[in-house]
Length: 255
Image 1: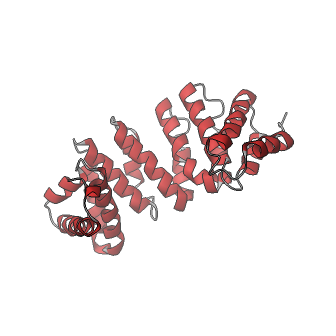
Image 2: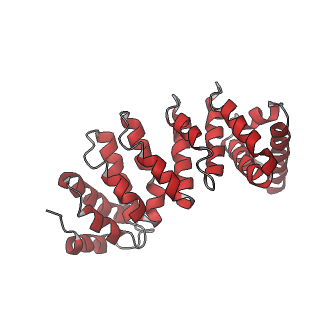
Image 3: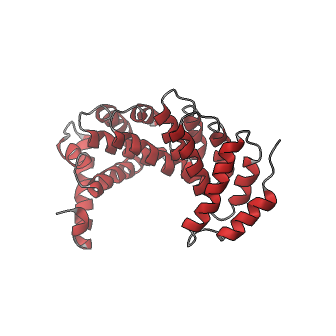
């Protein structure tokens, strides 16, 4: 039975069981329960496992070294679900201490399986929201990586921080304005749109776009920003007409 097919009390029991089993396996050389939960086909079981691992890391300081050693083992496991859960568990720790787990994102970003790479990007989003300085510095190192998919994934990964603090990510996004890969530029345009419709963000985005040199891309981004205010009209800070007028009144090219 899937996790969310259980009633609330049963789910609580499952979570307690996972937490106890993981703690026991971390303390010993046994990996049976840990591998079972990290590789479970149910997404929510795996999520419970990586969240429990994060809680154990911070509540049981004497186990921290063992947990990092565990990640060293599991990041190269043959099961991609286990590698994925390992990256997500590292992300729980990276929300507070990124440097201790950054190697797992370096490794995960190059993983052959897309679910592991997606776990890196998901973790970058959640870490960047609360621990931005080291996470964004790490992300910047990959903005000009020769692999276009890595550039695209990093662009997507820093989006969430930009929804509240666009000034933190716009300088990084600007580094991609002349990227020649369509998938990268399309993701860049998408991210700009996702940032700009949030409350208080449009002004910052429009002002920054005025300093960009790729006017064709900027024009596409402004169109996307206007369109996003319609697509997400129930969530956008401004109406589409208000956004269009603001851009018309305030966008000024650096030329």
